[in-house]
Length: 440
Image (cartoon, rainbow, N blue to C red):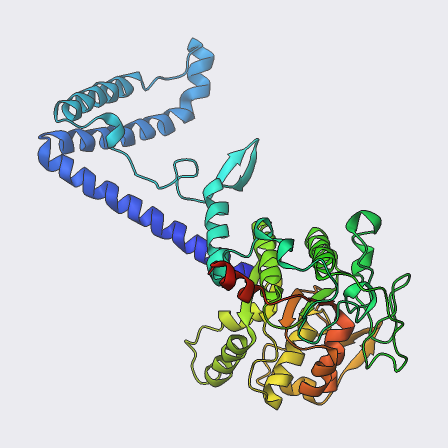
């Protein structure tokens, strides 16, 4: 994704420079038509410039001898004086025609870098402000986050969540698991825990050290010990803290992914959008898709990439290479074995378990046979592994049991093993806003 963005920016700078040069030539041609004698003066200045260069080069051979004999190097003074006189004449002609000297120049869009994208800073070449601004704008357009433009942490309002634990939560209890959250990690307030270590990738079969035991049905047949109920408001505040720690420690390679589970209207998409916007603001690449649209992207790629050399595969590649992928409403897509294989492949690659084979025409089929080799508690295919884990946030109305029923066991296992499962509870916020007359 980064390579694609940089290529677009480079092409934009080329377009700007070309447009600026064409605009300058057009202005110059108009002035030549309006100011009599200006073209001839410019031609003479150009010829004198060549003579000056020739004079300097020719004098270099005898410079040492002449300087030794007279104490002075040969001078190109007469040519320079003639050029200065022509420049003054040129400036007078232009000014008298109503053109200020500042108007006759190449009109770059950015004067700092002259539309190259780079400037000098303390002897170092760095990216210009305009480059970074263009990159951020482009990343936002590619992220698909416009549909979640209001999903920002500054718009987070815990008052939509009841303070009582006894609420209608669509069949999900805030006390269904320790801390009101399903997962193998602690959700104590961030001030009381280590932000990085609490995100070590969880394993379904073994709870993280020092944390509550996972209540995942497939992980253990032993019923979880009920924890004291917490209110939906306290629950969402803890989830918010978990998400903020996720953002702060995003570059930690041991960081786990996030799975938001809960009924409709309890803020899952909102929280996913908050995470996406904040990471985008911090210059990470982010990609948002609803599950049905994501599988549409995969289907278009599968139908076109082999038979159409002009097909743009970047949209498909972004699913794999975005720093953060947000899959919203997982489980609303029409089920099929091919989609499940693609999803398994995507989850494996993004968790750093699998290196994509670019030349293979059926990536999902590689995984369908479970032809993996274990190596250092990781997974490799064809002797390669993806060293960089990309992060993923998934939201779904499904609970853990639903994952096992809807998808095959391998997908459910990947999610439970590589994601922190956060359960959202509360009333339908959309209905609350509708009653209050708030429609955005």
